[in-house]
Length: 337
Image 1: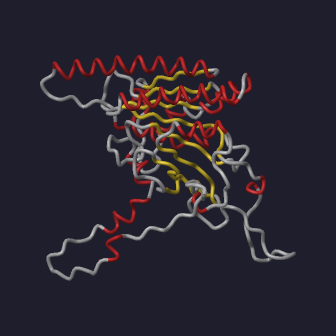
Image 2 (image 1 turned 45 degrees about the vertical axis):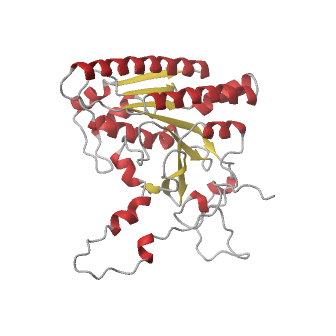
């Protein structure tokens, strides 16, 4: 009996466009092909520019639990490394919201995690990055008025904070339904973003105080709560988990200089994982992304898992799992050095 394939390490079959197998239409009335758009469907950059949407085809969407993780390739990256893309998605959403007294975002985070600090959010809103114009200081502060920060110390604090957000979301839902029943014209409601930072790190505290099984149990219960929230408020809520621990097993060779000049002595050059240029993690030699019970449990509670890794100085973002959509394998270059 053969074992089931590992979808996280298997080498992919490269796609072939179906229309490339058809004979060209020589008719004068043939409509122009949309070849460029089709070929760019793989590019995750198109999705993070559009931000959070209600469409089920979108990667960053309402009604799903999104998870951001990094590879254990570097031992000294700061919170900024894993927090930069979720922060961009959040601030991109804040730029497009309609003025409202409702909260537009909730951020549950450890006090030591500074990628979502008010100053960092303000600077992002005022900066012109990734083709987005910056806001004035006053306008940026008005957008930040709708963001609620909930700092936590440990796992029980995080569970309590999620409960408070759940109650607030229920109140918002009731108010929206009441307005919908009394107003003649339909009112456009802003999507709401819930960001939970470091559930994996907080779970480690439970494991140290008890055991891995206990940690997996409390994490599973919390992830189910988040999944239920995402389904109950599927029309307007997007949940983002920012995982502060890395996936996979740390290989010290990945931190060494991988430049190959062709003038090496003592035999052929040693090849390392991720040494073939910019490519998907599906094509790498990383043996397992989820070697521990904690990592496996965390992944099970995520609908769409997004991985950030470095390849020859470029930061690569890719979808390594999409349980409720069709975005598996989409990727893009976030930053090139």
